[in-house]
Image (cartoon, rainbow, N blue to C red; front, side):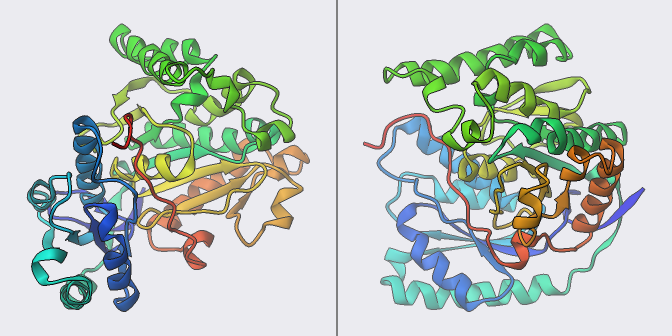
Amino acid sequence: MEFMGYVRPDGKVGARNYVGVIPSVTCANDVAQAICRQVMGTVSFLHHQGCCQMPPDLERVTDTLISLGKSPNLASVLVVSLGCEGTDHERMVKEIAATGKHVEIIHIQELGGVSKAIQAGTDIARRLVIEASGLQRQPVDVSNIVMAIKCGASDTTSGMASNCVIGYVADKLVDLGATVIFGETTEFIGGEHLLARRAVSKEVGDKIFKIVNDMENRAKAIGCDMRKGQPTPGNIAGGLSSIEEKTLGAIVKSGTRPIQGVLDYPEFVTDQKGLWIKDTPGREPEILTGMAATGAQFMMFSTGRGAPQGFPCMPVVKICGNPITYPRMEQDMDLNAGLIITGDKTIEQVGEEAFAKALRTLSGEMTKNEAIQYVSSIDIHCLGPVI
């Protein structure tokens, strides 16, 4: 079984062929955005980090930006540096270039300010886009797929329908030799023991317990219980009464296959196959960034109440489990899993539709959030304070 993708110099396969414009610090966001407005075929990654943070977070931000730059959905990269930031922009260039991508960098301060940086960056980006436009898709085996999964704006139908569909696709891809990444550590609470049972080793099981405990302890450190933020008001309005109930529905989307390991937030997959956890929060801007930083070509996103957003370089396929929400938000939802709730289709039938949609998306078909350019949800999950 195959899809049509862009084979990169490092052997990874992309579903898109963008030029990434990556600001190394929040102060460079406006320049990066201005460049992308001028040049078609570019995408920018506008975040709020990169300076006045603790050293571990500066390293975490640098590593995450590097992993985003390595995404197989990017043909080449332009790094936009202010010049005095805390992130290591030179290491960004070096490590992204090690994948074989064409990488360039501009420094706003050295170029003499914003207007000159925008002009220089626009010239470079235009050249990179023209260079990338000559690349062609070719047939590749489905074992090259890296799929990220998430649920958001969840209600009771998420765990009963749309999460079940994603779990079906996850199992199918793992059986075909592909890679599936899931996260939302906050939504393992109360169900971590169920995930640990599926770990391939005691070491992996212990890591699952550890990331959940660490997430809860970060909340307790400021005098709060995690359950005061989860479930969200929208989840509660949708019928989810507790974080444990939300968890039981959320972990369904991981399917049933063994869990191979746990990835740190900035970590990019190399030779990992099978089902993996990435330690992430649940909020969209941070988890979508973390999942794109795995090297995932696309994401399957389950929703009940309706979550429309996407991501700059990673197509996000929205699967709606609520038969009332789907017709109301049909312009944002890619697949109607609410038909499972109404009894018109089975999980397997919608699962096969979702798998077929995945292959079409990987081969170039746009998702609805791509078509309307609702794709700017990005931020980087950090652990310490801004100082």
